[in-house]
Structures are given as C-alpha cells and as structure tokens.
Image (tube, rainbow, N blue to C red; front, side):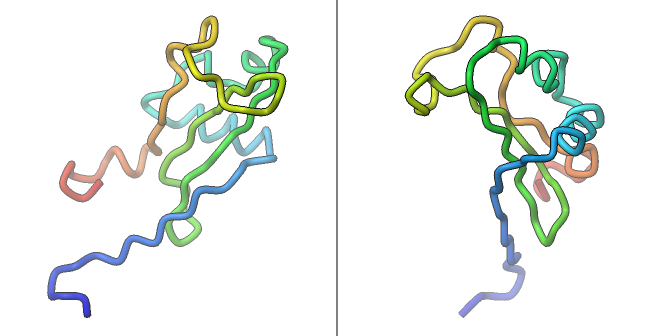
Amino acid sequence: PRGKGCIDMSLAMERCHDITAWNQFVAQSPQANGFCHSSFLESLHTPFELYLIREKGVVLGGFPLLLTSSGEPYPQPFHFSMYLGLMRSRELVAEPYHAQ
C-alpha cells in the first residue's frame, strides 16, 4: 500500500523513430546542444538510437545512444560525443528540484 504523500511516477522509456519529433525535443531542451541534433549524429556515420522518457504521454527527457557496428552501446566516449547525455524537457526543468 502506498502511503500518504507518495507520488505515482509511471515513467516509460521508448525508442524515438521520428527525427522531426527528436529535433523539436532537442531544440527546446535547456541541456541540448548541436551534438544532439540528428544532422550531427548522422554525420558521424555510426549507428545510433534515440530515446525519449515519458510520463503519461508527456516527454520529460531524452538521450541519444551511439552504437558499435555490432549494435552494442559504445563502452567509452565516442569522438565528439562528450555532450550526448540526458536532456530534460523545458517543462521538467521549470519544476522545483524536489519535484523533478
């Protein structure tokens, strides 16, 4: 049983296949930079996947994942990828830290 004051956080991580939606998310995220945009990722000529984190259908965050030629996540930083971390949505950043 959940106690009083508990928050139900039903987060879902899903692969994003919509490049336009991904670039729109990147454009509005305070943590984003040019290295996260699909055009830069495509210029690396290495496989990558895009992921969004949602709660009740609302995008809260996202991240790109660079892959090796065998489809495994890169075990170390890839060239020019030092800024490819988790990005939060503008709406989530506007929340007080304890609510994020």
